[in-house]
Image (cartoon, rainbow, N blue to C red):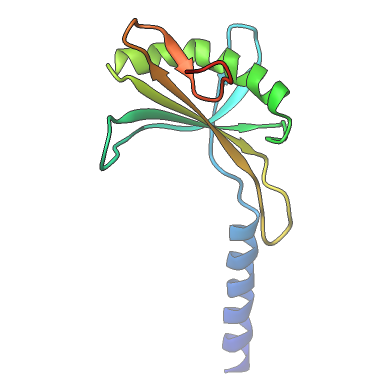
Length: 133
């Protein structure tokens, strides 16, 4: 009986630690510049009000607080992702940048969304731009 109890407890801890150490799954994709990005997923988001949007989630090595460096990375991703959004015949898009999770048992990371909308004249606008009207 004692062996069975110890065995079950050992299995519990193995499963617990294995689940704590798994990292998000992603697909590596290379940008035209040769830079590698880790795509966590691309999916259509449907809102209760408003048009749907295509969302790309990826993991970045940058801190989302470094907006200038993050925006430069996003601009390069947008050049490729924009084609996917247009092929899906959508007028809204979101690029979700996620930091690499930090921590041992409880992992934490920050993320930031860059939202794009297609204007009536066919040009795209990032809502983060201060010059956006």
